[in-house]
Image (cartoon, rainbow, N blue to C red; front, side, top):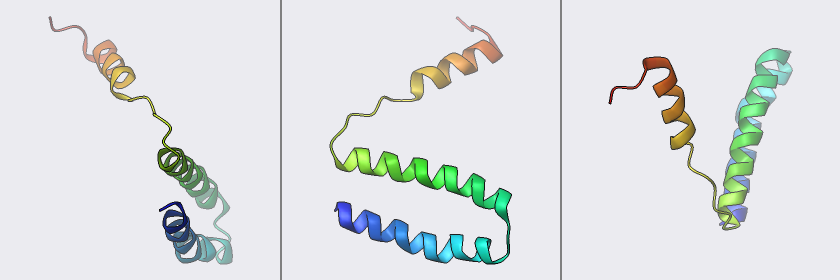
Length: 71
């Protein structure tokens, strides 16, 4: 499964990143690269069986600090 995920990511590199380099869109490439590498790392960690923490608690705390406590 790890090899399949890597091949899928490689496919996306060739279809998405190559045109960005050819058109010299460096800022878009930088943002895309950060998101792409983060997603790939999470995929690899999941495939290796690493238990990733849920982002629900920090997001809930952020929403509560913006909206305020309703209870």
